[in-house]
Length: 473
Ligand code: SF4
Image (cartoon, rainbow, N blue to C red; front, side, top):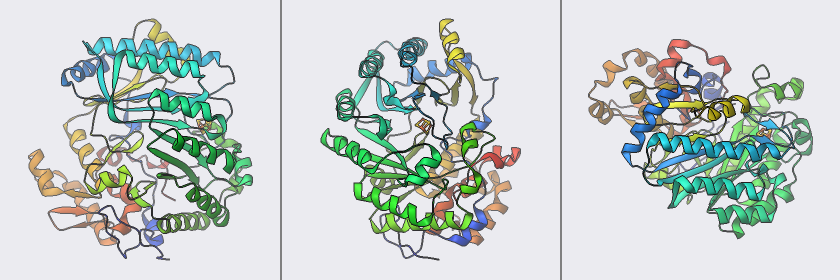
């Protein structure tokens, strides 16, 4: 079933199909999404607030622009597929208190950094949860606290996740006024039976209205999230959803595969397994989706992401400037990420700090004037080297091994001698090409790019705990 021609990241059309069912069946084992390397399941509790403090001090000395992430965990209703750290509540008093503590956390972090003046920021993301659970006054208050410490630079990426069921025109207008220029809309599926099965009923009209307002108030980029593999989905119904979304003309689309892990994510226990599409249907859904997006002119960016060819992400990829971070792909240069709020994960120099997961613990730590760090990781030299390698593969589908070896003063073949056998196997299967100088992932291997990345994941090799990760299909 080789049915697609997709513009590649190099901007050229190729006859080679992206969708290769045989390869998917053979190599689509559970694997990480590599929004970080090492992945979050390698973090440990010996990493403390003091380790984060040491990294923050170094971070202030660099004087480079940074990224900010705020986790806003409140949602008024549960979606059964949800795997996020969220708090279901209708009590808005809870978010009012939370914002006060986010301000405390910012005070503490910038105090440790010893920042003499406002810190330049080129990237800001409010994620959740449902960030627009906050009232207008709360959103203004939070942005005010942010601007007390940080200076949002011209041309930066300032994005927010939106639940279209929960916003009106005045919300979108306010977000634009506060400086947001990118909006990401959760849709998942427009079919009513699917929506009822996941407890998230959302009409095409209310979604379209949000996109229209985003255009009206000057948002640069509108992104839509879909999930395939949800209960009651069929290839036909999902085709209709994708057509409806294409009709809305978003700049970007994320199409995630649903990972049914009810032992880890409690809300998923309310999904009847018998309603989940069988493997063949799920494969067909993916095939149709790629075909529809291709026909509509979207470019495959990598790992679940598609964009219009003139979108910044597609252009950045063509120019070798694409980066991967906890939010997916980004055009902003690798920079330190300060993350605020419960369970949020930052990236500061050679560390990944993660905050405490519950409100009580988070509030308690901040009341003690302590960083609310739960766990984390300090990367060693090997982690840093592999992080760069995996990032290149995930973003550019290519790695100049000769240059990489030179930059790191290693012999590529010697350093990765344990990986050579597996790379050979992947090469023979067509997932990668290596002429001794450049590793290239051809179009047919790109849906499985993380499978190639996994070959270089030393922690995965040593721990061998792949079962809890999701698959492409
Ligand atoms: S999927 Fe999003 S909106 Fe739904 S419960 Fe989870 S965090 Fe909230």
